[in-house]
Image 1 (cartoon, rainbow, N blue to C red):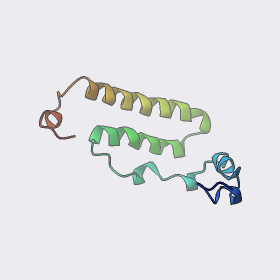
Image 2 (cartoon, rainbow, N blue to C red):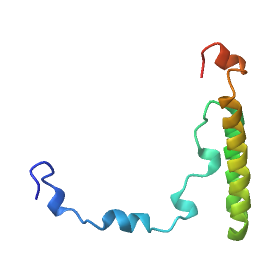
Image 3 (cartoon, one colour):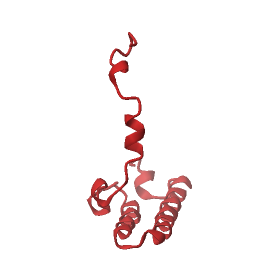
Image 4 (cartoon, helix red, strand yellow):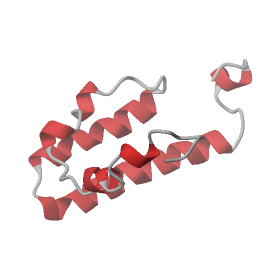
Length: 93
């Protein structure tokens, strides 16, 4: 036991690793449609593309993920280019 962390000795040191190895299932993940809005319609539309994962075979998941990632990367690139958006020019996120 450690004086700074008195419960340290009673915890299972492998519990976190076991959780990390737990299979990801549809039941363990929120549906993409149930995700809270981000405040940016373009990001919400891109993330909504993740809802297609449930209806596609696993070997097609990479293509869906790459498409969503590409859209998000493009949006981030636009944001990084400067305050061309009226809401950013007015000081709103």
